[in-house]
Image 1 (cartoon, rainbow, N blue to C red):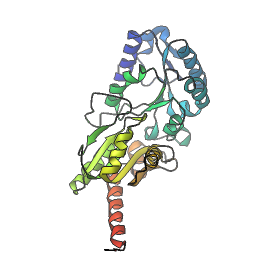
Image 2: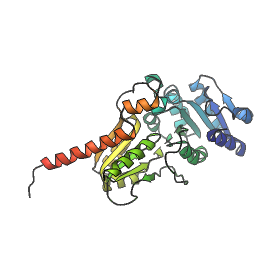
Image 3: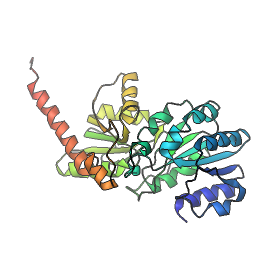
Image 4: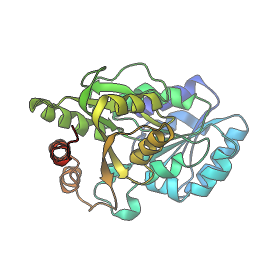
Length: 316
């Protein structure tokens, strides 16, 4: 039994309020359903029905963890999430499978690279984007028993770093580079891109470039203070995500900086359109999202900034 289904089963067994629903997606929990009895329901390929059912159960005191492909649960069931779950702020957890680049070989209809934007735009819906399986394990119970609706980007990737065992929604973790003081670059990221951010940081460090890497963990609530600290103590802030730049992390950071009247050089790395389907390593290569490409893009941006500054007129 994999860690995810073990945690789900433990939650079901320890609290009679917890129920698990799926829209014919059991790849990540094949062993647990027979052990959950009538606390597990597979509605079939009917995401809208699943969310409506979950909202009804939650309104009667249940905590409901729902599952479907990320592109389907956020798009097909969007109105139901907005109206049935969001407006009433019901404790329904919506777990999106194969989000972002994890849908690697699938075409645009199955590429959930707009899911964060869709979910964060609904009042009361929160967003948890674990970096890997270990990060998911650390935060999952807190999310389930938070009493709040959450969208979760599911991943079972091997641990990218040694994570802080303490988890608080809205509190980021620094996983590489200096904790305090000035640095050349801060990379703000989430989800599976954390691994590639850390690789890029190590490559840049060899070249004498000081990089801090921040795992934001939850994008709603988000760690505004960490973002502001990055803007004040970095020559360059990089937003790195496997999501459209529009309404993703780049948009979130931009909104915060404008609201707080902060100014900093920002390099957004993400998608402006759908990616070409391929196996994951090829997607990362094609889209310039692996560690080597990220490091190169950051180095080139820093170099261009230096060149621009050298061309500015001096009034001394």
